[in-house]
Image 1 (tube, rainbow, N blue to C red):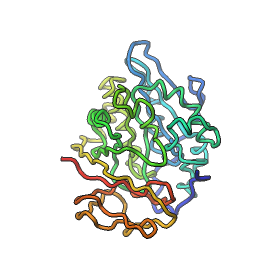
Image 2 (tube, helix red, strand yellow):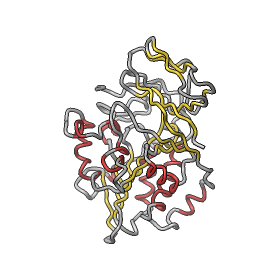
Image 3 (tube, one colour):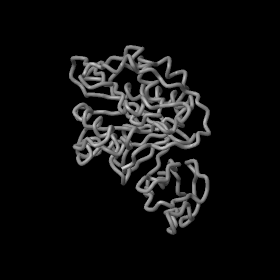
Image 4 (tube, rainbow, N blue to C red):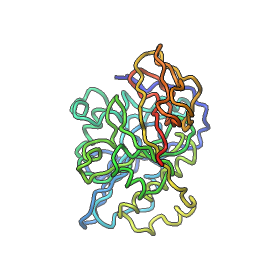
Length: 323
């Protein structure tokens, strides 16, 4: 377990400011930071979550927009939830990478053995949120990335996730993966990751943490998700969506191998940022101690290479484009 998120040198301009979420912290569910609107009509419970990681500013911006524009569900329920409040409180522009979490990564905790433990702030918060998450049928979880690379949807490994990504339509890149060896993400929890369940979830990496375009992607994907799930009418947010332009055709990447760091001496062969294509199978991408990490297939795509190269974490996901 990590005892802190650590800090890294920031090379990116801080185009986004931290949104004041104080007006929304009381909520109306008995869980701090969680608000649920009930239409009184039969339908699914749709939810959008933000700040699973405390330094990802685009999600609160999107949820603030939805609150201010008085979003309400046509059927079923709609919830807007701010997740890792402790980490978000710690965000500091002087060291913006340092508040990813308070004690440990909250997006690796969504399995029973960690959800029944209260040894860290993130675990206590996940336990508090679990009864709420258990009621959600369709989830959109908003995130952002370390590097300034193309926004992408993480749809999970199941066809139902890819179907929901197609229905939402943005971002243009959809990545089908099984997650991390270090633990389950929120989007993989319970029925979301069960092929026999009607529950479904998407995780959207909206862009680099502090670039304006990540806030645009967060809002566009939220509006299109709400429309695709039938939570709102096609007219809700239509003018705002029109301002973002026509979505590009989607491309799909299948993850073949997540690279989990095994030693304290992991290093990439190049300064990879993400979306690089390695032409030849067997090309050395990195070394984990003395062990080479190689491209598994011709045309291997590098997805989200990390700048945090700690033992047990995912260094990069290796995938290929699907025809």
